[in-house]
Length: 378
Image (tube, rainbow, N blue to C red):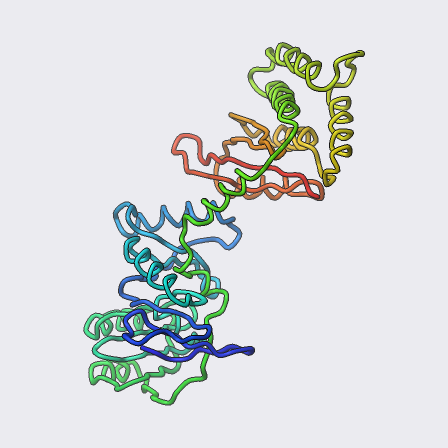
């Protein structure tokens, strides 16, 4: 299958992986058979951040498929506000990426049904070689052999999102014509305006290796060089003391604070009295940062104190806290649900700090556990 899509600024051809001809030389979009990459509609609130959204989508897909999703890849997005996921066999996706990256790569790799125009209140159906590729408005789509497609279209016509018109490209099979006529719909063979996949469709791009982001992040972390390792070791000890004061280990705070003072003596304040540990250590850190011409940003000590106040007010349990070599603060928290996690992250984001969810998971005994990372704003 080869057709063209367009946007206000350019027109892009769509090239199928099954096409024996070479792909276009210029920019294009690649497609694979939709039967191999079906679309599943999910209940995904738009407010969920990426990590939480992936966790919820995985859980819903395992429930729908009645199996684990090992050996599968999935891409999550929103189609006209409706949560959805495209699921594809990992081996198939790897083979497709290998083929495409070995030649002129496309802008995106999408299931073929997502390369059809998405028209409000209208369906677009492409019939070719006994296959049906259908886009059922902006929110849904599929590809299947004709007999299975007629069953899926019949199910869709018994639903709530009924079309007012149906555009059919290619010959109209008698079974399809009879099905539409039974629902007072007349298939139109007039061509529809060309249309290019927008941000909704491109969220399901299968060209991007899902492990690439993780590998890229690991490479970035390896390139960080922080000259003051002792400084962050001291901050970690100080942060541990501050957190212990807020929990059930309050009685150990004085012991840990004494250890923090020892570290501060070794790394920051070798002489003189220590009256305000946070303030004095902060001054030394600021002086060292200025001397090394570092970009000014919120220090790890300030991040610890800021997060401590927010988490203490919310009575959020913290099981672990650490300061990374690049000055970010990471902490493991437990919350009753994902909504509480989103609310906490929103409060931690402010003019001087940025918070993000590194990982999150559903814990049947304690609700939701998550690893958060706080970084200072430049």
